[in-house]
Image (tube, rainbow, N blue to C red; front, side, top):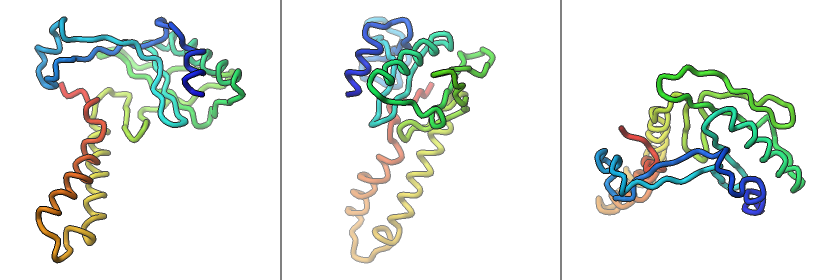
Length: 185
């Protein structure tokens, strides 16, 4: 159903999307490769969908309002309503640009502007850094490690090789979840 709604709302709409540039060379930490024109791809993104949640994207506030209007109209066309109490707006200003609180209004109601939010299990902040996300990942990995303390780490008879396999299967994925999207430079 979501794919039908989205194709209805955003089909061929380049105006209200954001551009994402990414390298296809497989060398994550090589800045020179990211600047090479031949290995950089660019795509337009309108939204991120996850289960029954959606994150709309726009390069400017002026582009976000029409996008929200389209989304709201499409939801209405399919008999759905937007929970404005649960819907938030996050504006990330460009580097060295002053922050202004966005005023996005689906159906005439102003949405709450926030400094950060989690979507899905990944913390996105207005300050456009990964500090909050890294702190969250460390806390979750630490919690998982603590939860396994009595069950695995302190249990007699469990071999070190088993401990390492559990660490690699549970702790590392929890710590590094979504890290491929982190900007590290």
